[in-house]
Length: 177
Image (cartoon, rainbow, N blue to C red):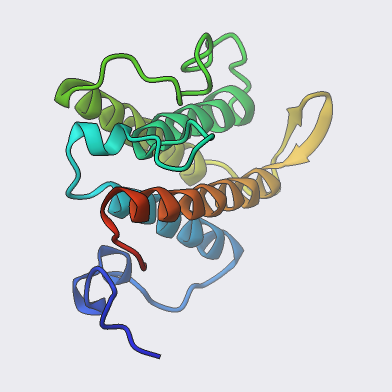
């Protein structure tokens, strides 16, 4: 197997910078979550606003920028609304298609979308820092451990990073990592 077609050599991949054996369940789960967050960011790297907005896999309306906006919505929903129990907070992109419907795309929308996503990630990190995986929260009337939500977030990012792989390949042919 050759790694010549990878985007970055392992020593330049930001996901590998702090790669060490994990200690414990929480560190392991959070490590996977961080890995996939960084993977989505890498998939968007080096593209202009029009490329990020390209809906490249018809008939889907998925674009890389839509994925960024959608994941901001997902982070906000699970960490602010569900784990913290702040259901009164309106969901991001509530009146849109979960973040995939894009208004006029320009550099400002790209910047604002990435800032929103990174802000929700930063908030989610704080929530996880102070929350035990055994804590139980209400999810649609069902008691659910926070660990289940973190596993779901890993799964959500992994699935969408797969979508991002396909979109990025259609945008400029770039594959891998």
